[in-house]
Image (cartoon, rainbow, N blue to C red; front, side, top):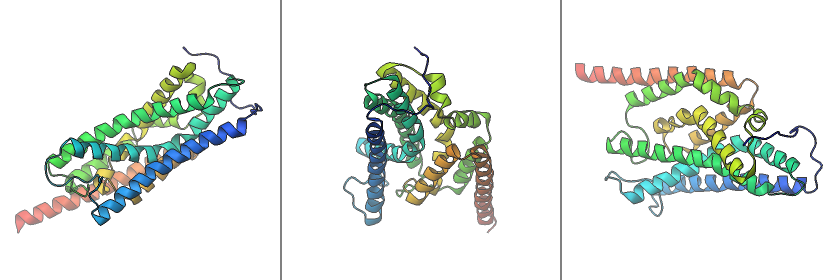
Length: 275
């Protein structure tokens, strides 16, 4: 049940403010670094063909182990990409928790909020794993996890670009770009409330960014450069004053890129037929 929220803008003079803030920041940084360390290892393992724990199934039909490894890879990837962009909301949530309690479970509530957020992205990771499984079965993605169909790649890029202009994208982005408005409008008390708020914010964030993640099926699921670029883009889209225009400009660029890729593939097919 929602409750009246105290001011989230006044200085917090409670004892232990700096230490509790440091713990929350340390948790965010630690989770992010662990996720990126795992991704770096996966990239290294693929380059050196280290088959121990490598999330790169072969050309054979996938089994449970293959699905598990790819799911872990996607989960680590989404954690490393999305935790930095949600960190302002987590820190604001922790600050409000400190103001509401003279002494309380600030850490637990903050971690539950982040857990709820990551549960949503874990659900997306499961969906992405199943999509990759389907692409693998249809031979539309290589064992190195790069799309093999320029026509499909062009269609994906165009779809992502169009979504960047849709009301659904802008509505979700607006919620993600207003960290103060979110807890003020959607506050819930208790541990269950913290988890529920994290889930709710995760849904808005997924609605904002889910289609962008499909670009990785075009450029390479384990392309660390593109993973880093998308991470920075998501962060800037949410944080910069002109975030909505960043979304629109990027959408136009993706449509042009997708159109070029698709038309080049069509020309290649027509030239092959005419030869």
